[in-house]
Length: 484
Image (cartoon, rainbow, N blue to C red; front, side):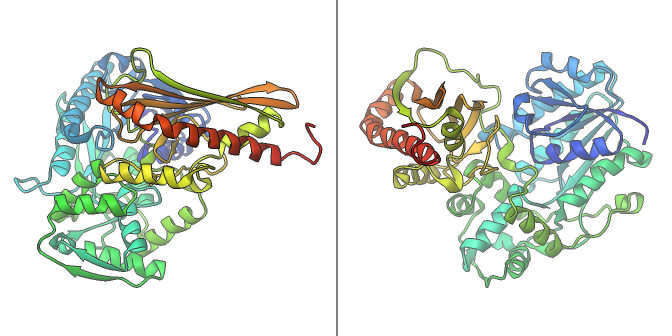
């Protein structure tokens, strides 16, 4: 492959995060577009240009598209925008197509969803097709690849199956479990996304990609259970509609209802490949569904998940990142007889499997309430138990800012009548250090203030205990007599 100039949108997401290193290996000159470039700080992508921009803000696109030959469009509003994801996706794709046309981009490559166009197509799959139409609207040749369930560590669709199998030995399922699906391994998806670059017959074509193995959703769950060594019984009942099923999945799986509902509603459609041209044009090794499951599980057990659906920022698209006005504040401080680096290492390990050090039962109750009303709850955990980067989820928080050994800022992503941040600040005093924990809350009118003053009595118990636990854990790492 000659050294193509390629732009990847959605580089902080599940697909884009895995595509960039493969493009670099192929010899391409890669540029990425990200709303929050700091989320890419942990990526080891030598030579990659990073441009800050947003497909919903057209004026941010020309600089990123300058001198680009081929652009990958891997943006999806489903996980970030609630019920209006379809309209936002259409606007975003139109903005990008217009900017690409003006910049002289020769080709756009887009990953969409399988499904036969028609009145019965779910809103999610219809939106995926409409996004492809919007990208084609300016006349730039678009290669659209359409896939069904992608099986891989970090895939939202696969994690729904995994959680159901892991938690429920007996399932009452709706009739959609008999719908047919052609799953595909994430490795095969990546091979096709890179392979189309050197296959001229794919230019301007809409192509369907799959593993060649057609299964029902019931068979997907049964075979996943077999790989996991679990017993599973499935009973189908006629009363569970896709909407009711999405509420149920919200309670059982890691995927919140905002993402589960459109995905589940799409399960009523058979999604299998009818156009098999790409299998002749690009030779990709076969990977069975069971083998794809084994590969995904091995990555998950080793904590080696390269990218995940949780990498997407769940803040609403287009919403200002900084709230306006003066926040309500609760601030607490304590001196620690351990140096700043020891203290910060305890802070950086918070959440996920480590828990919240104090009153974990209260954190779990708050997460359960959030879960019940469609929030993220604590289902996401954290991607790395040892370190944090900007953009990482931490249970129902997300890292907004981090400065090693000095500062960690978490933004709340639970359902709240306002905007909340939790800040940990460390002051280096040589052999000792000081810790300040500050809760900021920007309330919505009336309900926000009512919420704040209702939970305020709990703050003393929760945050004082958290402060004590962080300091005592840091001091416990010191040799006997140190700091005395």
